[in-house]
Length: 65
Image (cartoon, rainbow, N blue to C red; front, side, top):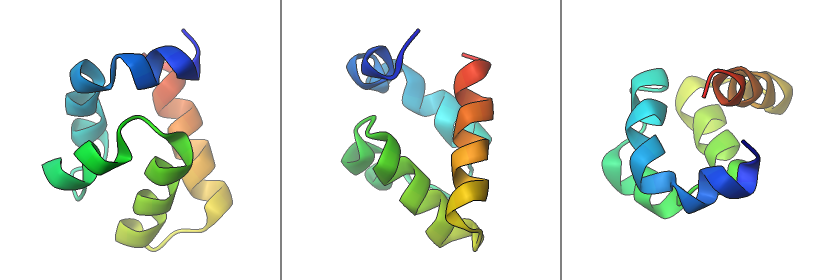
């Protein structure tokens, strides 16, 4: 799976994203709409972590899909 497929299947995958990052709201996940940079930014904002840590978390989540 590549990130374009994540964007294309976001409606199905956003539940998995919410399981991983419970602080993200449904509305935020709708706005993110599968865009990786948006997802990383919201993770940084809600969890108070740096850009690299957010990127690593998204990479780890993506590898498990």
